[in-house]
Image: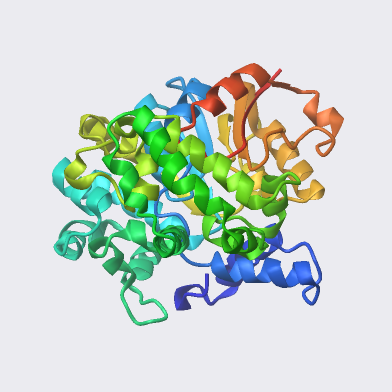
Length: 413
């Protein structure tokens, strides 16, 4: 968050939000150094694509036309996909200015690019040489000053940020580079990860996993690297979440289990998360699965509804505190609570409970398998909410991204 446009009082406050969310330990302690390394890594674009399954979110939320949703934006994919359910309003918030800028750009694309083909070329293929021209002709004038300055600004190596849309944005950002490093490491051991995409059935997918991918996790170097907490910064996993993800097990075992689900439990024709992991982009020419917001059939209704979404760089708790009591119906927390201290968790849930309308629902994911709320959030607050344990487990099993250990649904009342 160190762009020149934000070097002012407001910018300094926004930079402090991320520090406040992540920093728990003294700066000179081992944990403190790790937390500050993560904050530095998280300042730029992390998620070109969000890694929570919007189909699962929508099934859990049961959105009605009068509902107001407040959600953490991340890369914006799910926020835009929620528009397919026709909610009245969506407020998207994020601490990361790159995610805010990306979500705003996607919304501008929905409203101002000439047709679905150009929208898909810009955000789906995201590697066309003509995309900067599309930006200049259709998007530049539709953006607020902060978002325009972000995309027209330059990275520390001198390239305009906008250039990622002609160089495949899905190979950029912290996550894109992490996945790329995984491909390089696999090739070192003779495994071509793109080989998964040549399998023609789920039986072939499992056979490929057992033959090609699973043995990599027995390599001493892989075990050593993955057992270092900094190794998962590329997944956007801070030190506190690393421990929750491990749940006392070697991280190599955890990653093998999660990748097995991603590789084997869903047909490739239905799982765009697998295409992102093993192809580093969507299927060529839109010939395979894509997020709901990129599907051609959804483009007209999303274009008509794009004005219902607002995007803000602010903490979720602060934004909730500014909302009228009882005004929000659905809350999407992603995995943000894994980062939080007990004090932060309780402050968040006090704010959620105050802002929640009757029968409001909260959905979130956890690196570990269990809900993190019991024993940490005040029993007085938690008693107001009902945990849908069975539905949470059922929908969690259907999450095609396969990254998280648990998916959780709470309803007020």
